[in-house]
Length: 138
Image 1 (cartoon, rainbow, N blue to C red):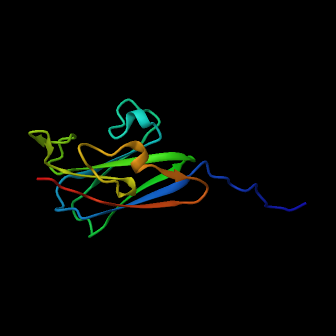
Image 2 (image 1 turned 90 degrees about the horizontal axis):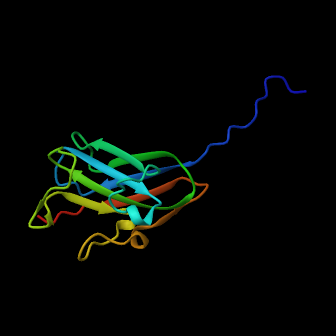
Image 3 (image 1 turned 30 degrees about the vertical axis):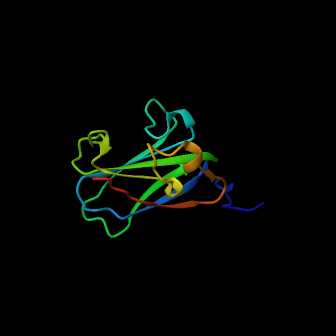
């Protein structure tokens, strides 16, 4: 019999790290939402199972890192908002976003946000790294 041995700790999920590049300034916060729910992407409203993070942009180095710990396996998509004035919402002028945005897999925006499938990536047993370039229209 081994003395002091303990059962192996098995994590419930893995870490998803998001490197956010091309912030135009260090004002406000970067709001992140990660979901498996195609119908709730990109806003994640009403999705209790989504992962969320708000990271201050002030003092951020050239690349801001957002970490989602203990993420369960599945197919996810991430939406980011650079809430420069910290009011908790995406400001618009004539339906054009005034603040920065970005999506996993660096999915492009055409006539609105990308589809879930365009931004989707798999989370399995290994940690995941995503790089998302912030985009600004105004």
